[in-house]
Length: 475
Ligand code: UD1
Ligand code: CA
Image (cartoon, rainbow, N blue to C red; front, side, top):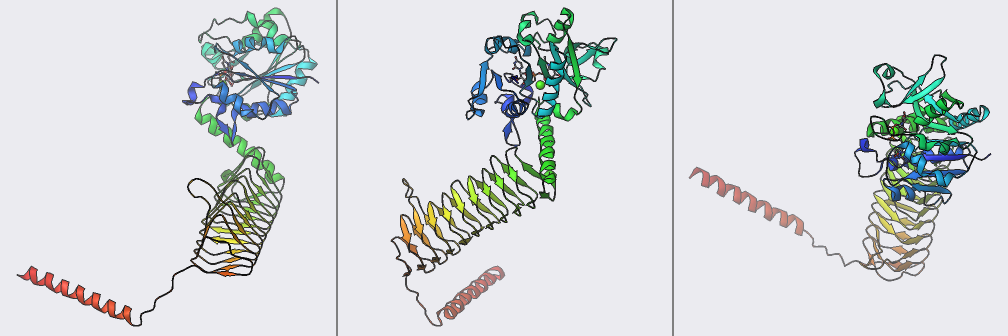
């Protein structure tokens, strides 16, 4: 069934006190308007038109990967009714149902939109509005009903009489128009109100007066329809979405010690019997397998983690962590990192654009960049690949079963063959063949008894100084 969705996202969002437009502010790593578009799509909208104005480029950029989202620019922001006027050409003569959503209402569920569309189609309503009962209706448009209990009009908070302000039933900002009625009479909207704006909400009263069928249905849950106008409402929306996603994950078999301290984005997948520890953030396209322990204090963005891995106090971007790997505490995995099965990356280790082979270990205080490392390798504490000469990046290649002693500098480009061994504190500037030992350090000098003699002499000097100081004081 054809369904068109119109998402109004041109407003400035003055109440956010931001240099960015409102709808790009994020809930769990995704912009507000992204959530509205996603709900519309999930509800079956085959056409999604986003009205942009303030920060149009920022909003378009959000959907750079989705060419099916259409944009119409509202150059002057004269109100939500005016926004409908500017899409008239884009919508054309489309007669099917059209839902209108606001780009600042991220929590609405697809099922709720579907129910609205089904209801409005069944009754052939020109206009149906989804209403709600917020605990505090301040700022929302009020639903005015007539003696028979039918909706008569929507009156904006600022235009309400004192009696109307007592009404709690409010406008969610989600509507469905059937039979081309969204744009047909939009020119009848005037800006004769306190804010001097063209309100889409007037459409309802206009159709009512024309004797066309209109209706209102109340959503069961207010928390879905929270409009984000301020930073404080952004925080509330985040908490609602966090709770919703975490409840779903727990229902699917994920353990959380403290769900309020775990933040998971909408596209993230987590396998069952995985434990998410407090202060864990999983963003972007991250997927976590089964039987993993992630966190505490871990942030993974666009990472792929296999089964049975443990990732503790780690920050990772665009990284693949295979089965049974152990990472952290305090590792930093940068884009292009691939840890193969059973690899271990320990504490204060940074890895970038490198493959760490199966079962290989980089346990302490290392930087590994632009490196291909085989399996069964052991990198000693404090060892570093020097991959950058100030202009170019160079690769390091380490074979299988290589042992690199602590505090080794590997100056790239350089290659260590299979089974090679590098003595601690070496600066490796040329290739080490398979099976060879490489050692680069100056010869050690041992002077017998010299330390004892030196310390005794220093102590004598200090005693003499103290004596002199005492004598000076007494004099
Ligand atoms: C609106 C409704 C109000 C409802 C509330 C629900 C109107 C007149 N009022 O009020 O009844 O209770 O939402 O959250 O519609 N926008 C444009 N172009 C414009 C003006 C706004 O695209 O010229 C967009 C904004 O980006 C925003 C949405 O429309 O996403 C709503 O605008 P906003 O100013 O937030 O309306 P509210 O005062 O919250
Ligand atoms: Ca709003």
